Length: 152
Image 1 (spheres, rainbow, N blue to C red):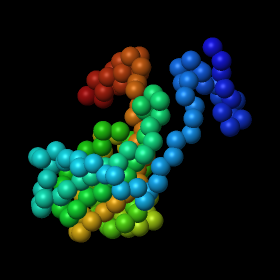
Image 2 (cartoon, rainbow, N blue to C red):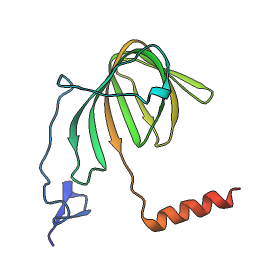
Image 3 (cartoon, helix red, strand yellow):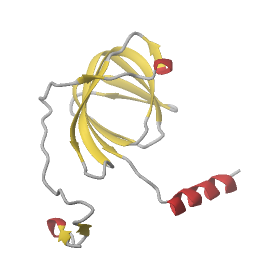
């Protein structure tokens, strides 16, 4: 197995596991969105239409980025992965617990996996998003479960 020193970090990557270390590109001006769907039980008000476009994906599928947009409406959203968003167009007000944030073009936010949020899109919002999925090892899952049980 060959290892590659990426960007001089000294961290090896297994060449057999990740044979395609080619750069991928995309653009926030791309418009080939695909219609998506919100979980119907999450929609609180209106008829928001969501669309998405994947721009890049890591070979192991754990890291990706893309574009997402949405028309007016109010809805709940539970994040299934860590996500960083950068608002490109429009505006959204997001409530989480006792806090409320309004994001506009240029604003950036981080949402951890499992975060429950409530989105209000007054007209339209478009975001660039980065997703990170974390696959825990069996030992990590067992450790997390034990911690959860001990908290009770």
